[in-house]
Image 1 (spheres, rainbow, N blue to C red):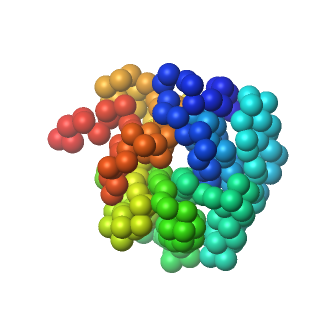
Image 2: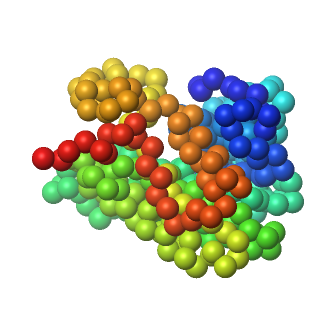
Length: 265
């Protein structure tokens, strides 16, 4: 798990989110934990969503609380529309408001496109795209009544550059980027900003053992010379939820150490 940092807006490297209530979907995973910890470190109360990993979510809640922050674990299957709406309602009821949503939940399987069935395609589209639509719609209704807020989708650099065996994933993340732009267009009048963050390769325990060739190639290609960290994604999300980003909406913020700047020919 990502190292905890003090849940205070006094940190010099973070905007102050004191008074904000944030819902992070998929927060039991490596990137989701990093996002939740950075929101807590900035002073926000954090609702931690999980689907089946209850123990990991509860550990994250305890970690935030032990650092002096406020956190709540909430379970939901985001492939079910009604559960998306119930999740948002429960998060908003916790402190009587919801000011930030980070749509991080998703899956990333690998499969050859030629052998992919429609069911295989939907198994990626449902958690990666449809849950973003449903959670954003539910959160926007709450935020409209509360005077506004921010929504951030976690996309991927694969939304811009496809990878082998990831046709369903790349297409889903491209849809997520465009959904953010469309939602920004329609919700802006209500004080709701919607952006996306497209991370590159993020380190996790066991990654180098699982994919040594990919990690090696990444490290050779990335200008900054390292893999991303969960807190790199978290910092981008905190910034987009903060007053510092009050005039930023409909934007895809690429967080990839500069690898997208590499020539493609």
